[in-house]
Length: 503
Image (cartoon, rainbow, N blue to C red; front, side, top):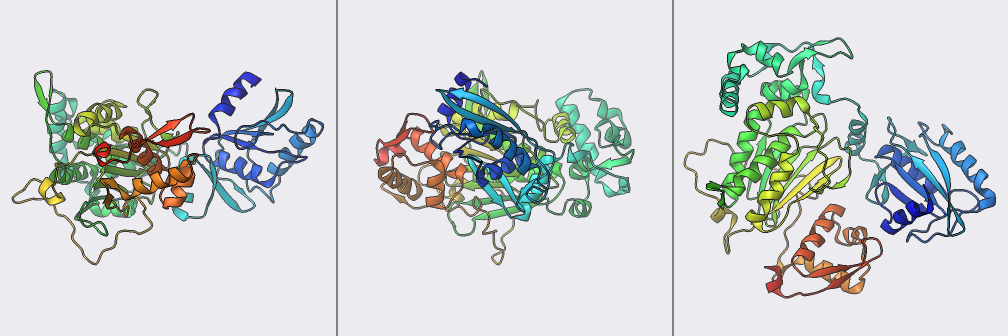
């Protein structure tokens, strides 16, 4: 890296893969916390001799060799690091000052420093103590698809083979003359890569993809005990929920059940596409629900969620991410999380080619709500699609009437939704002058501190970084605030607090 490239890094500021550190005679302990977090996430660069705001203070040139030697000695000390992370160093001359770049690649194992595990979240090194978070880190380190895990003792009687006539019919509707229509059950399962050989171990049998797609409920519960999809409507009863559906069955039936539940509570609007009338609502539901079924990590203890709140639709599912942060339609490079399951869904017409889901969400969210969706990838993939509700209607008013509804919903008044889950329990606040309480609080924070960071706002409101980012993004779109300058060094400016600007 040269001085010009370093200048561009300094201008962008710290992020998930860039950290600035002071450096005296020796690196401080927090340098090694960042080494640990970069190794455990996606890798990154630490720039020694740079202040948090990007100002180059410089490292001591006479101590450069000693600093580099100290870095190597500490990361190789088994009393400090349980596994030695790889690092490389280089010296950069910048305005007559020395900057030492420490490059840390992502490692194959979860690493701890002084018996503490650190992970990188945005521009922060976070201590990890939760068993669920540690499990997610180990999943991220896997170099294989968990859906391909073979269970050699599974038998055809463990599967819902009665679903295969429906599968054949759906495949034929998607592709006339589809070869599955002429295959017997085992030929179809082999063709779909649901039965085969694991060439790493030599084991032959049904795999996890087969279990999730076609397994009997009791088989699924034993092999993937944490698997469930939790659909919740919370628009009136903000402390609990208006309605709830818990789905623990196979993915084919789960896709149908969650989709029908969502259609009951989301307003429908139609648009012309050429000379055809289409429903943006139905397309958005299809893409969000299919993503919950296809692109999730089934061995994770984190359940999937489909939430209908007053601001729109939120979904969450465990992911094995290779990218952390918001996804942009212009630069998004899709990667299949479960290629066998994704291929099966494409064959039966419940999904299209890889990447089409994100394009459809961006295409149809605008005519449906007037705004773009927000998609964030990480150990948990989060999607948000705004909803423009009918003026003056409640959740019950928006839901169409269904006689003889065949899908069971859960109304257990003794059941508690986990209070550790911020998004599920997120309260949609009362409005003041037409502006929700959370946005009023953000406006007040900005008035006090125009240099307010996302992290500071998240701490003050006791919500996640992603929630603050999404709220501020929507406030900018609504004309309440503006950003002057870069995300790193810029400032906020309050533009308007009139209710008309928020409608």
